[in-house]
Each structure stands twice: as C-alpha cells, then as structure tokens.
Length: 443
Image (cartoon, rainbow, N blue to C red; front, side, top):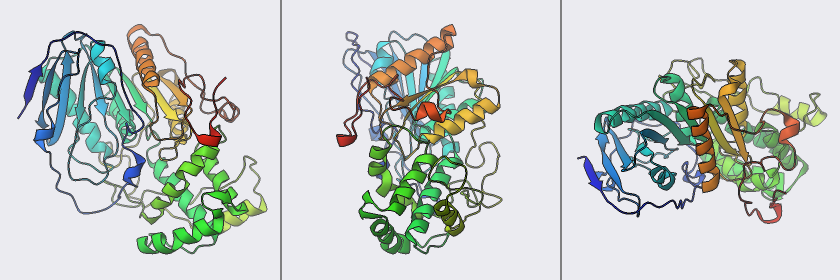
C-alpha cells in the first residue's frame, strides 16, 4: 500500500546528522560473494515515516518492482529531485529504506528526495542502478517530472551512482558519490592483495579458493602472531612491510595512515576466507597475476620485495569474471561521466580505500573528461566518516556547478607529492577527528 501524509508547521534549517555509518558500516562484515538466491522481503509496516518538525511535506511510500521506497516533497518544492543510493546491506533478507542523510537540509531548501531499498541485498550494484532508475520514473508518475535530478550515494551506493549516470545519461543532471567504490573490481583486488601478502610475509601456507575454517582458525592467528608482538601494533619488520604495501596499494603515502592501519588491519583479514566471486559474475573476478608488490616508491625491487613477489600466491581471474556487459555482471565504471560529479572520500578509509578515487580519476582523465570531475579528500580514517557541513557544502557546490556552470574547487588525487603532504585534505575537512595519539589537526 502507498501512503501519503502532509504536516504544516514552520520552516527549520537545522541539520542534525551522524554520517559515520551513512554507507552501511564496515562492522557488518565482509561481503558474502556466493550462495543460493535468497528470498527477500519487505516489512511494509516500516515504510511509513513522519515529517520533520517545522518542515511540512508530502510523503509517499510503498513497494515498486519488488523494492521498497520513500519519497518526500516539501511544500515549498523548488522543482528538483535528489535521489539516494544506499550502501552495502550484507546478506540480510529484509529490504529496508534509508532516509536521505541530507534530508533536513534538502527539505529546508525546497528539494524533494527519494530512496529505494533495491529489490535485492548483497553486493548487487546492477540491481541498485536499475531500481534507483525505476524510482526516478515512479516519482514522475506520482509527483511530476522534476526540473533536475541529482544522484547521491555512499559506499556501494557510490558505485551505483557512478554506473547509473553512465547507463542513463539523460536521467541525471549531477552526481555526488561519497566514500564510493569508484574502482569497481579494484576494490576486491585490494582485499586479495592484503591477505595474500600478509600470508606470504608470515610464511603461512594457503590455497585459493581458501578453506574458510583453516583461514580463520589457523592462518589468521599465525599471521598476527608472526607479524606483530601485539597485533596490529608492535609490528615486526615483516609486519612493517605489510603496512607499507597496504599504504601504497590503498592510495600512497598520506597523512593519518598510521591510525588507519591500526583501525583496519584486523578487519581486512576477514576477507581472506572469500573465494573471489561476487554476485552476477559467474567466475572469479580477483587477479594479482601481474601485480608487483613493493614496500616503497623506488621502482627497483629490493631483495625483500623480490622475495615477496616470488613467494606470494598468484590468483588469476576467470575469463567469465570481469565481463563488460553493461548491467549484466558487476558493472564496470568506464569513467565517462556525462554530468558534473563531485565526490568525497576519507583518506584513511581502508574498507573502501582512497585509491578508489585515484582509479576513477585516471579513467575519467583517459577519456578527456576531467573537467566534469571534482574530488575532495577528507581527513578521516572511518568509512563514510563525514560531517554534515562537509556533505552540505559539497552538495551546494555541486548544485552551483550544475545550475550556473561554476566548477567548484577540489583536491588533486593523482600527484603523490601532493597526497603525501602532512596537511593534505585540510581544505575541505571541517572538523578534526579524534584519533588519539594520531590526531592531526589542520593549521
């Protein structure tokens, strides 16, 4: 059933937002990459939602094409729609809908918003792309055709966002992926690299596909006790090499990485039990056959680097793994944005590492479209750890770009010297994160 309610009261401009989990928190665990087709369901009693105090609106909810949805239109609607693409939901069977994280700001400034649960969970980007697009069409039928449509999304939703604007170039006018998987399959390679190198440096024999019980019960304890006196601190020389490799593979030398490694080192070992498949891909998608692992930026291999590259287990993707078939398999982001894109990323995020921004920037540049991309580095080590001000500022700047052609400022992400600067990311970071002894305020 579809519901609609309207509440009249005065307008408020307050935005209260805790965004640290906006994209789906990493604590949910690594994505399960295989399994029987699940039977998803929607608890329709959870779809209705109340108006915010002082922000009168018309609200709609229901189920469309197997996905739950919410739509909200302020009484002072400015004619624009902002779509929200949510992040990874894990393997839960229940499909749920997020309110847009910028909801108070959007309503206070006249923007309508809409969000889909998607009709499937798991890491199924293609479904997210299709269901979000279907919801934009449903909005046209329920409310009316908007003047402009902005697409925003976090984490896996960032992957959805970058793919959707390429697949449906005439639907969206601007995009804001945050903490997004903008390197698609490169994310899964990063997980593979971390775990295979950790095992090789620790001298732990492993196989691929792994035996999950052996990996969890035997390999991880051997890795952590061999590479550190008190994991993940107190690293041995080989443990320091793992840390150095991880920094280079996740975005290069940059501020806050010491804090980032402490936060993510244990979590990333959870991906070592995975078999390298993802939903929609009939074969293994990960590959490190041509990867050269290093501990520093000197292209010449040291004896330790040579030894690692000779001993690390090599995994080859299946021919049917990474197939460019539009939305048939895991969608590849080509780097051909037809509209302005403004992205944000935490420089210390290792669940969806900062390197995702670099992969995307390289692809966009290769197509000669860098004038359509602005990227902002945020000095955090969490996943999707942004302040309300950082998000609002980015969205306002995106709107000015789309509507008035004013391209906003951003951060350089491909110049190693710039990224390594101790104050990198200070320009658009609005609050110093408390990182204990690693807290690094901007000037």
